[in-house]
Image (cartoon, rainbow, N blue to C red; front, side):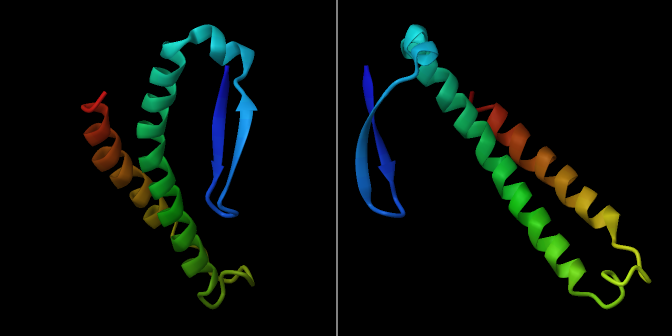
Length: 94
């Protein structure tokens, strides 16, 4: 069994063999991959928000010098709010 791998950056197609472990799963492998992708999107969004917040805090004077402490609660708040909003919303789609 083979699949087409699409590279959107280079706009190319490449035919690749499917991993043996995935091939043994048959259609169930696609179901598992589909569920994983649905659950992984919110995690990626939350990670992006956290990275932006950390970058913002590094730009504040005193953080890099160690004279001021970062606002850890803000990052935890982003993570918690995202989990409550996104993961519970998408879990009902499964």
